[in-house]
Amino acid sequence: MLTYPQLNPIALSIGPIKIYWYGLMYLAGFLIAWLLAKVRVKNFNLNWTSEQASDFIFYCAIGVILGGRIGYILFYGLSFLRTDPLFIFKVWQGGMSFHGGLIGVLIALGFFARKTHKSFLELIDFTAPLAPIGLALGRVANFINGELLGRITTQPWGMIFPNGGDLPRHPSQLYEAFLEGIVLFIVIWVYSMKPRPKGKVSGLFLLLYGVIRFSVEFFRAPDQQLGFIAFNWLTMGQLLSLPMILFGIILLILRTDT
Image 1 (tube, helix red, strand yellow):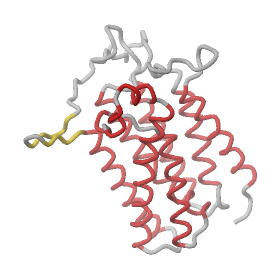
Image 2 (spheres, rainbow, N blue to C red; image 1 turned 135 degrees about the vertical axis):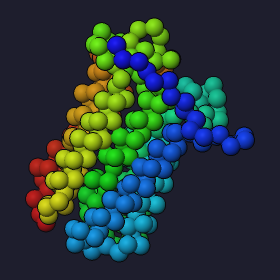
Image 3 (cartoon, rainbow, N blue to C red; image 1 turned 90 degrees about the vertical axis):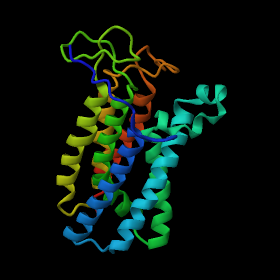
Image 4 (cartoon, rainbow, N blue to C red; image 1 turned 90 degrees about the horizontal axis):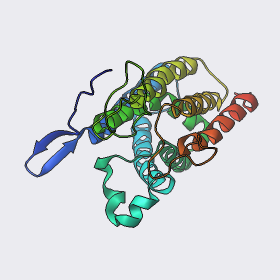
């Protein structure tokens, strides 16, 4: 059994001001996405200006934050909101939905497409390789917060989390950080290095993320406020991943034009 490192969710305190690792990880994710966007604009002969790349990240950040939080409330946290109406603002406690963030980003990209007169599919293809590192950092933040716990396990790498009872659990946050983050980044980045028909890169992203998330959910405890939502094994995360898998397959099959 591994020892949970007992990390403090608060990275820095200055008087009454508390800076949380959760927020720092999101900030680092946006910064890395901005740097990667600059690399793509410079090295892949894209018809983008440096200013457009910066504006693009700003639009995506707004979509991630608003969509991620609203999505979490709608998909997972309505019970919390009924008991604490201010819960929606307490983002430092965690509670961001990837699927909600994805919807938020798609909406933001729709506005950005209208502003720049760029193809929507071109924009989501540009976005896909930038996202996984931010996903990895978000999962590391979940691990630091001791949230989104894994299921109980007898494997030697199980951990006893402060809020997880006396039995060791899968460090599923780290599984997701590695698979959704590092592995997905490498695959999507390499795939996107060659010219692809519009929609192919984002199709591969949707398919792989959906499959990874659906699989890792078997090692992650269902959200306590929801439990299993069907068949005594299906979780909300798995249900929300099914449309991603479907749309990913559709894009990969149908998008053959350049």
